[in-house]
Length: 264
Image (cartoon, rainbow, N blue to C red):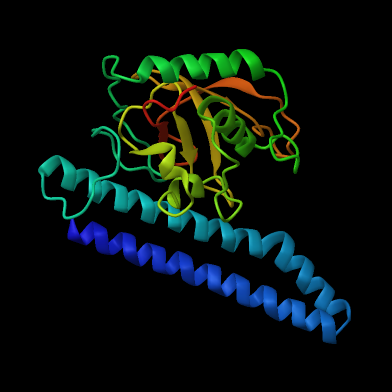
């Protein structure tokens, strides 16, 4: 477990280093544009903005997501073995693999109904009935983004204030859970543990990741209410229910489960 912990730390350091490089190049380009004009600079700016900056940002995001998966895997193993040295993350232990680019062949086993489960499932069903087929734009910016589903659900069903990630990345709802204020309203459930209707699923991958509301779940897969699912992801898709799998595609970072007693 210590080896995985070190690997996760090293991955995060590399992600941070790539982010620092990207910010440094942005700063240099800004300075150059104030003091220099010409075709060579314009060509470089276009090349950087349209191709290489998104690639570096995507790589940094992927490394950070993998680092988070390594950390969650260590915490889950420590909790199951009883060797945890600090507070374990909220949620139930699961037997799945940590998320990553490789498929997860063992889908989680969905347990029997527990306390709070019916309330969350009812909240999800009510939210879908109200918003399915409509465009949700909770913040009035950038159209119907995936984040707006999470935001509207949180405000309507949990009575939260407006919540933010601190970075404009949907993936940071999970990756920055300890510092973005969500811990007052949600429990963080590691990947491999079973999702439940009413949970928020968070994916890594790409620059911003993706987020959606779980509406159904079983051993074979799950359904979500989501937005911004059609390329080029311009925020024009209405909320819709789609089937999802536990393997393939962007890595699932984990789930956010509304705390018991908060569903209105």
